[in-house]
Image (cartoon, rainbow, N blue to C red; front, side, top):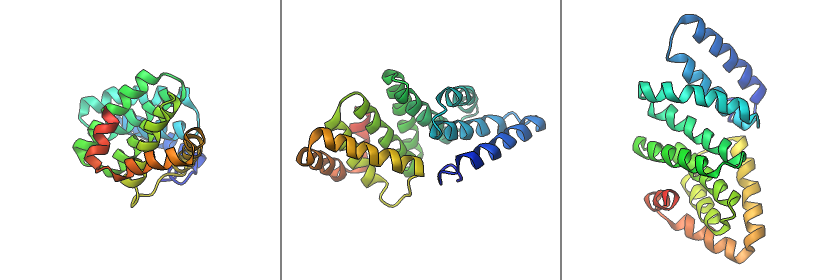
Length: 192
């Protein structure tokens, strides 16, 4: 929760201690969960190499033990990290798999996280109209759910950037089209 509030240094310290404690107990399952959460915080902090390392180490174990939620969380933030590093194909693969996992879990918070990151990916690839539509869907999907400080800042910057490229009228049309989609339609669009 500290990471969601933007208290990244506090979150790092607690998760580093958690990783040490988990390693000391011999609990094979606690370590990848702590690495996943630490990787999320490192992504939020912009420490992309460290995020990739932690999430990459956690993911195979999370898959093996069948933890769909943490697998999808790891994939979501690996997708964001790949986008930030310019590896759009890997980002798309991670985010699509994460979204499918969250849909299977019926996890609206995770679905919203993926929709935002797929919008950011579309923006990075220069697909501004698609980005606007996905941002509209993400905003609608998460209307009742609080965004992290990290996501709120990126979301607002993305809206400003995409609106600047498209112009107010095209932005509003594409955003409204996304907001009007049902969750199922929004997911189909995001996966397409």
